[in-house]
Image (cartoon, rainbow, N blue to C red):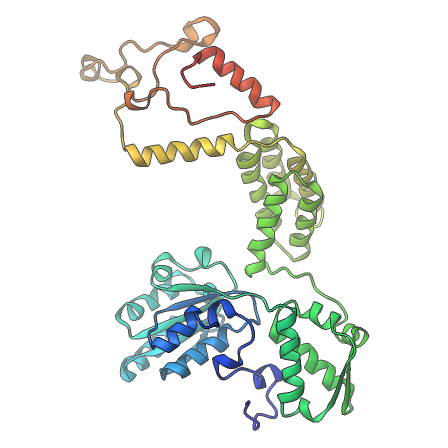
Length: 425
């Protein structure tokens, strides 16, 4: 049960679980064979990074783990804590023989602040639990990331939120004294967006605004309280990468309607238009490439124009580029070519450059046949003469395989006319 003495604490805090059995959702981590359950059962614990959207239990799980393991728990927020505060906790943990340090929004720590944690984590002085709404791969330095286990937390689903709502009505020491009539929950669930804290805040607002002991939950009452639903997009949160990913995949999938929808999601959420323009430059090269070389030119022009114009007019320029790229023929042949070539270099190392291709600025190099027998292509018919450009070990290896589109079909035929069967075109 929950502590009945905390009458003036917000509902979301009053309802904070005290044990794993009270936690709603996250069964992939907390189920019978879940990794967090095993950590507690086995009393074995290493540093953890919780990655997930707001209101899904990151702080709660940190406190429960510390309580279940009998370890001192300290909490800092990366918004208002710095290296000094981190070092103070480390010194305290040294005297206590170890502690858990929970850092909320750890992605907001800069490199020097994250580095301040490393030594204490390595020596076991503190066990770190970091919470982040951002992809740790982007925002947590590699040294700290390699010393931590990343667990992904998920938004609560409809059933989870309804269980939480029922628990509030029956167990909270204040709400349980009122008469709550549930007529419809669609709006409440919609506005909550899988965030338990948001659901509790909205519900508490509804209860407080009713001014009576009888509370009615229906869509009309909830919409009146909330007024408007902000677009679920946080340019500094986990949804940032989800929407950006969907945006690029819609362009790659040649769906201009979906692509411009996700563009609107990002712009409405306050995304930096230059971030979007950079993604378009990458998409133009990676997903369109030589199927339509003009795509990269337009994307580059778009980036320049967006930087000059700014919002709100930049939305028009971005929309033109997005719909053009999404509607363009696609090829990832250039993208695959460089990946394959890099893989080959990593596998075979620095193979010898053929002598006839080497630079020969000195007499010694010339005496060693550097540059000897090199044929200058422009001296020959159609500016081409067949000769070997690859290291001997890679002769005939094909990295660039033109895609199946009109533009690259022409390229393929041209290369085949030059090289015959050498590269398999």
